[in-house]
Amino acid sequence: MKTQSYTQYQALIQSSEFKKLKEDFLSLMEKYTSSVQFENQAIPEIDYQSALDEFLELRGRGLFYPTIQSGLGRGPLYEQLNGEVKYDMVTGIGVNFFGHSHPRFASTLFDGVVNDVMQGNLQPGVEATVFLRRLIDQVSKKSRLEQGWIMGSGTMVNEVALKILRQKKSPASKIIAFEDCFCGRSTAMQEITDNPKYRQGQPTYGIVDYIPHYHMEDSLDVNIERTVSALKVLCQKEDYVGLMIELVQGEGGFSFGPKDYYVAVFEEAKKQGLYIWADEIQTFGRTGELFCYQTFGLDEYVDLVTAGKMLQSCVVLYTKEICPQPGLVAGTFAGSTSALRTAKVTLDLLLDEGFLGPEGKIQKLSDEFRKQLESLSSEHPHWVSQIRILGGMIAFQPFDGSMERVKSFLFKLFEAGVVAFSCGHGPYLVRMLPPFGVMTKDDISKVVSIIESTLEKEASE
Ligand SMILES: Cc1ncc(COP(=O)(O)O)c(C=O)c1O
Image (cartoon, rainbow, N blue to C red; front, side):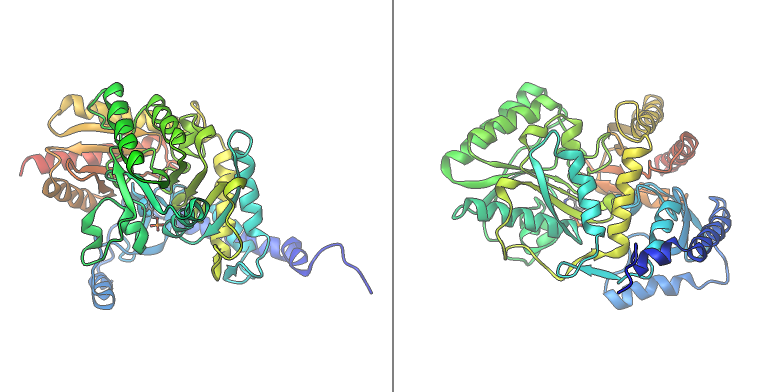
C-alpha cells in the first residue's frame, strides 16, 4: 500500500492553489474592511426598522439597542445592517476583544472551512486539544491547574465546575458565592447569581449562601474583617463544597480589592476546607495576564477556573485531584470548528504579540483610558465619578448613578455612535469591555470625546 507523508486535509491546505485562494480572499476582505469608516451614514433605502421589528416578532422580545451587525467591521468599528458604523466599546459583552473582521481569525477560519461545522466529544478533530494544550501550558507552571473541559457557554462551564465540586465533596452540595455576583442563566446559575430580577417566577433550591465582596469605598482592613467573619459564620453552620468568586465583579459593578484582600479570604477558605473556584468568564484575557488570578498572584490558591467570552470558546480548568469521574461531564458538542480554531489564535495573539504584562499593550491602553476619563472627571466632577479600571475592564458612574440616568445616557451615547453597557445595582455604572486587541490611543481619544459631548447633552436635560 502506498503511504503518504501527510493526510489529504494537510495536502489541501498546503497546496499552492489553496494558499493562493486564501491570499486572494484576505486581500479582497481587506479592500472592503478598509471602507468601514466611522463617518459612514445609514443607507436611506434599507428598511432597517423591519429587520429590528423581526426580532420582536420572532423572539417576543426586541433588542436592547436598535443594532444589527451587517457582517463586516474594521478593528473597533462595526457596520450595521443599515450601513451606519459604530464604535464598539462593549464587544458583545466582552467577546470581540480583537475587534471585528480580524484577518488572523479570517485566516484560521479559511483553513477550517472544509471541516465539520460543529465538533463533538466522541469523534473530535485536534482543534480542541491544540487549544487546551496552549492554555494549560501557560497556567500549569505556577498553579495546580493541569486539566480542563471545553463547552460552548460560560454558563455550561460553570455548571461543570459546580458538578465537579459537588462530586468531590458529596454529600455536601451548597456553594458560597459573593453578593452581587453573576454566573449565568441555567437553573443553578441563575439561583447562584445574586439578582432576583433574573429568576422571576423560578423556584430556588437553597444551593447558595453569600458573603460580601470588596466594597471599594471602605479600607482593606474593614473589607477583610467583613468578608472573613461572614465566611466563618457560614462555615460554622454548614458544610459547603467551595467558594466561587469573580475577582473583578462584572455585572455586579466592576468592584475589586487588592491582592491582600483575596489572600486573607482564600487563606480562611482553605482553612475551612473549601475548594476555590474563580469565575473568569468575563475577566479572562483582560487584566494584564491571561487570568486575573495571575494578575493578582493568586496562582497557588485556585482549584478551578472558568473562562469564556473573548476566548471564543469556554473552558473549565481543574486540578488533577478533582478531575470528574467518567459519566459526569459530556455533551454532544465541544464547540464549532471556528470557535475552537479562533480560541487558539486568541491565545497566540495575547501571548505572542505583546499584550500582557505591566508594560504590555493592554496596560498602556488602560492607562490612557484612565488618564482621559480622570481628566473629564476633574473638569466635570458631577458628570463622571467612581472610575473603576483594571486593564481592559472600564467603568464609571455618570451623574447620580441612577438607573434612569445611566440608561438615558447610554442611549444618547449609542445615537452618537458609541456602544457601551451598564453594570452595578445602584449606583449603576457605564461598563466598557473595549477591543484593546485592536484599539489605538487615537480611538480612545475619539471615544472619550464622544462620551464628553454626550455627557454635556445629558447634563443639559
Ligand atoms: C462572570 C460571568 N460568569 C458567567 C457568565 C455566563 O456566561 P455565558 O453568557 O457565556 O453563559 C457571564 C456572562 O456574562 C459572566 O460575566
